[in-house]
Image 1: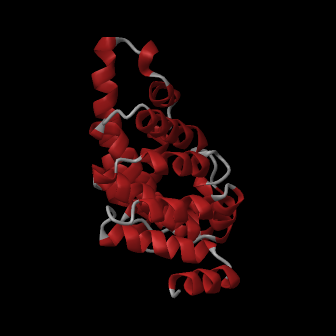
Image 2: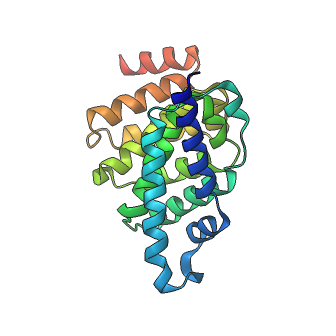
Length: 211
């Protein structure tokens, strides 16, 4: 790995370490205890961190050893819980929540580090949020579907989704919203369903569709 790639990695992980500070985790989990005068400051700083991390994810080279990193569990958990509450209460917070979902989508697209997102409750939360989505929310819907599709590409990720009855949830969501889903979302759902299905299930689904 050349010096430039090493520097890119160092910047990315330094940013993530800073973002993982307890103050940010606490704010994301429950901002009611944050002084009103501080809330906007936190929101803006968090947005900057997420944007910087998202941009660097495009270029950072990952190595196999990165899959074992677990020091970001607290901030990842705080972020998905913020998303979960936001969607359940039908609050549209583009400034933070949509950024978080986009970051999760980018993280999960890097297959090596999908283990960061497993076993922390994120998959369960995203599956619970899926049926609650406003299909017209555009980027938010694409991010949620993208996260599930990306995680399903990882063997352990697919196993966790299936352990939570995720295959049935995805099929139901696609069937119930087929007339509203755009081509991209529909394709991602179909690919995720295929990745989560056994050959026997795929043959059965094909037979049912061809009737």
